[in-house]
Image 1 (spheres, rainbow, N blue to C red):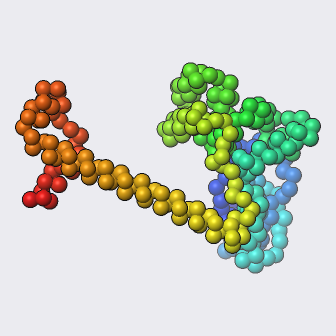
Image 2: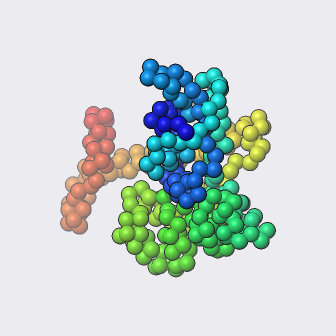
Image 3: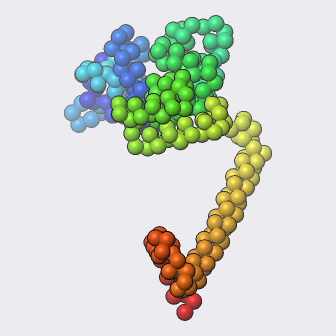
Length: 287
């Protein structure tokens, strides 16, 4: 049993609040299944400890108000401890939406119940059931948004089961209940628009194919990215040409007293400030 205050996390990392809360609840319910791992070093007031593996378990014990935590003490160089910590961080990487789809969908096809899937994946039974309902309806976009963290799963279910008017009502209710605010609300509205226009199945969140890790795959990805940038540049140049034309045309028309009088009669005597500034700048450059 090691005093928590004497443990230093040498390679701290951020974690999902949902995942961390699950760790806290699990330890509170059934205790610690596996001790953390530390190395010992001598401090001015006695032994101190550097964490090798188990940051989530350590923080969970601290949140539960514990002063000590079970630990395995190993002898290792600081470099080896850092490598071990990095390996654990990579190994515990949170699954992406597509991986979650494959796991849950595959286990359901093999006959596992939602409770069994929840136990094997570390998710709650309610969460697995909700994901299953979205899967049955082909709502991959909504699942990806839930996994990205900006769409609550309860709101995703309401969107899934509602018509167009119901979807807007669900978003409005989520805003009033403070489930969606700021950027999350904007992202949710954009998702709803894309879902309505392009369908339920998401193509955006698919992982890069395995061959992307080969030299040929990397070259292909680079070429595709370069082509996208070329298209963007062409669109930018076309937009700039149209803007130059509009500025030049309006600049000439604004010198026509009859045209200006006609605009005033129609209540259109003013124009956007940025456009007026561009016209004024163009006039100065021509003088």
